Image (cartoon, rainbow, N blue to C red; front, side):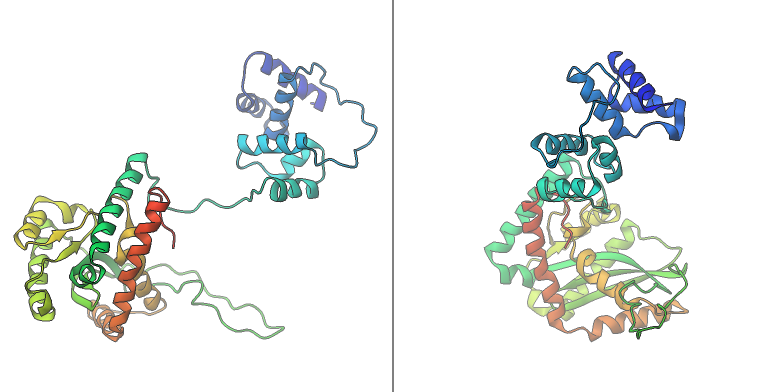
Length: 349
């Protein structure tokens, strides 16, 4: 079909009350890839809304010298708001101005840029965001009452899988090359099937206790409660300054952590459980600090047994200076503040 024929169909469907998206769908169904792009449909629907009746091109004496008019800026603004994925090529086709001018309007006049969507653990609801703000405010209030005392009594826990082989990150695989040399290559690899579950309890002074569970076994409420009992024994031995202090215990909302038997054990041990909002790994020190650095260190290493995994992981933690753990937990304050500032949205860094 010719352009004028498509325009006539668009006009007909618009007069029937269809939206630009519905008109585009109708055209795609009948004409497939030969149908006009959405921006063209959108543009002509707006023309008909303004009272235009002709489907023919208006007579042009030539492109005006100045095309970056307020009207053109508003027109492109509306197109972007209508379709956030619209391509520059589609805008050029719909407006009849050059690609350079379109870029200028988008970046300089409208101040927009096209970026890829980022992955997040979950698309948070309004309630999720509100819970994150409330819990962040509660922990911050407790922290600011006496920061030193808070950090002295604070203990956190989380679990992670440690694989026999963890591929290098893109950053780790970088290497120097001289002029004329080809870029280095490496085969794509994935994490190994062999793995061990590590449950790590730690504070500002370092690792208090780590439990390892082999693949094929799962952590139950009873098992986790036994780990909490073991933790209390380790605290008496390794953290004597906490003997008469109430532990500020921080864990996430995994079912095994919040089941009745686990909560009963926490109450029995007289730990003060800090709030943690659902779907919030960005507010858990193990997830945003301890484990990412461990996985980066493991990148490229190969193990052949659970014993090797455990030995190397323990060696990694033992070689870290005490200040490392304190610095990591101090980051929690800034993350809580940022969460509140973002009104409950995810904190990236």
